[in-house]
Length: 477
Ligand code: TRP
Image (cartoon, rainbow, N blue to C red; front, top):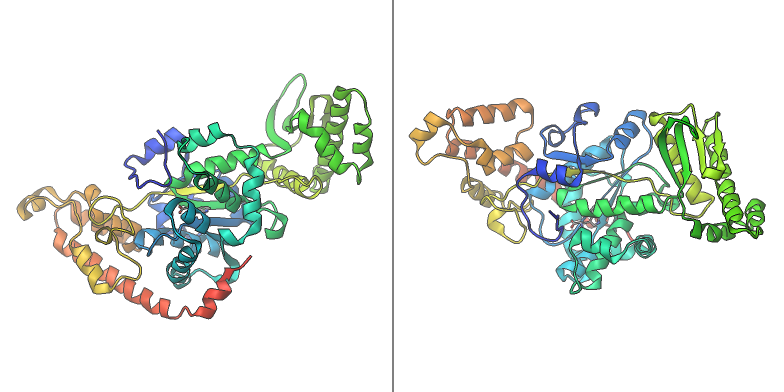
């Protein structure tokens, strides 16, 4: 089983996807203030590492959100789902970054950068503003114009092998290198927000459709691979006092280089490098690194330590699992600031399902009969909704007797994803359907009226987004 982010695969069984790829279920809606329906209704169905975000929200600690979009054509209501999530997270305190994937559109869709830029400004950015994203705490940027993102793609590529790319994406000898590079640029997108210039190491949420999970697996693996220290809860034992263990994970062969970089400023590294015996030298370098870690942890308030430097370990006997985020963030900051290493926390992610197209197969920008565009003429949208595939029975008599098939109905999805504002409204639509009390015509009529009202309002709000707002929103660096 493999997810291909560039295909137009339709996913049928989300639970199976989750299990196969080790995605955790998303169950945290009730821990969040005023969760939006998408989070409560299982549309956002999976996550990786989400507890970091809950924790940051609850403690009012800084956190970032990064997501991206490929500017491939006009946006449809399926895309709105992501915007609704972003505006919600922004209200909860996320500092928002949005990547416009012009390099990816060039590499995988054959768009010129200029065309990608135009589509992004006319459609995506305007819609984002019209749907309520606050430009004050948000930056939108183009991949091709943000040098640190591209630099990271090169730098992190150092720990990616061809077998990894083959394994994750199914690339072959015929895949062009622009395409191979695109996921690394995306890794750069996700991680650059933790660089000092963009706010330093902090929890980062990446809300995406589940087709993007391969990129998150790659990103999380790379963030981990470039860490100097790993932090793990440990059992009490012969060599370990229990609590949290901090282990030096940099490979031995990379230690001398790291030490050389630090030696001019820190004599302990120069001294270590002067040792003739390689084993002793590496232990001395490791010891110096772990002492820096110890110092850093004292600064953030830890007082009790147990050293086992020969074992490349430092322990916090009194600390526990709850302290992991604090220790992790403190050490990532040390890695960035004192050691000049990437020092990224693992990003967290959430995954949403995809809405079906109106015809029952995938909703796609390039097939108008499947989509309702955000810029669609309202009465044209009404016709599409009235013609949508439903879970209706062959005859009205049968439907009154057996009820409609809600689970097979695209209009039901419209209510679920967008048109039912609260649980009781959704339940009313569901009950009326499955009991046969309301037939498909009237049900579609309600959905069509709501779609028309939304599109009219959205068109008004789009008019208020002028060129000045657009420019202020999009960062050129
Ligand atoms: N690959 C994403 C898409 O096809 C776009 C994207 C680029 C992205 N960079 C990102 C998504 C970073 C999430 C995070 O739509």
